[in-house]
Image 1 (spheres, rainbow, N blue to C red):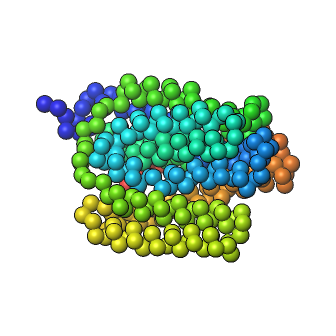
Image 2 (cartoon, rainbow, N blue to C red):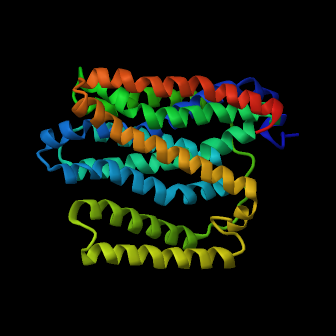
Image 3 (cartoon, rainbow, N blue to C red):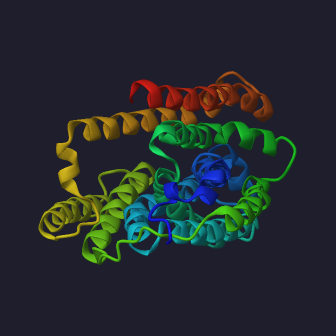
Amino acid sequence: MAPKTFADDPRIQKRRWWILVAVCLFTFMSTLDASIVNIALPVMSTDLRIPMNQAEWIVSIYLIVICALLLLFGKLGDTRGKIRIFKMGSVLFILGSLLCGFSVGLPLLLVARSVQAVGAAMTMATSNGIITEVFPFNERGRALGTIGSFVALGSIAGPGIGGLILAHLSWGYIFWINVPVGIVAFMVGQRILPRDITLTHASVDIAGASLFAVMMVSLFAAVFMGQEIGFNRPIIWGLFVVGIVTMISFIRVELRVSDPILALHLFKNTRFSVSVLCAFLIFVVNFFFNVIAPFYLENARGMAANYAGYALMTFPIVQVVVAPIAGSISDKIGP
């Protein structure tokens, strides 16, 4: 008789830590690529012969696509299989990383970043779910804490690693470094990741997913474009109006459908809502630091890119040590 869950399968339990390694590698690379480009923007702007306001879209397009698609791929992971979506995302991320490294021009780079972002969204949306299904309850905190440390590590280590690469190699290698690491992680995953056994086969809320994507793209595009051309332009106000209207429509649709893409009733749970709020604030602070610190260290303090990278490495090193320990403690005394 086939096991009902991954926790019931002794073969999967023997490989559970290797599964965590494969998931963590893609989690790290996906979040790393949201931040590593910042420190390379001046070099990329010069090499591609584009102004800085256009170069900033190399970062923005990645974040916009991920935000727009996370909910959809999370739902597809529930209905079509988390591991299947994760594997497909891994391939797309590696392909996008390979294409990003070629300095052909800004249009191709933005397309490649979009491909990379789709793959990143697929792995981000399913990684926690895979680990929750694979690990038994008494080890889940440590495993999720390890993933959390790699999310934080990838988010904050970008400028540090990017500075080290730029000190010795061309900017294309900030993307190409993902390719060999991604291939190794994918091969490990192919060997040890099991087939999905917990599928809901429920219908996907296409209307909700579409409205959410339009809302995210409109609001983020308005913010990013407003920084370039000013917030008093009609196109910026139009994008904000579209974003607000689709937000209201999204909430109304999600409250009506039987199987929404975002179960809004979850936010009635105070612990859940506070946890989400805390995670949001932590990432906001991390990314603020992530953007400002390289300019401060290189421009205000006059550090070379590689020394700025060394300074910025201290934060993620401490995080990657503390997060699994905190997860282990939560298994014993509670979150």
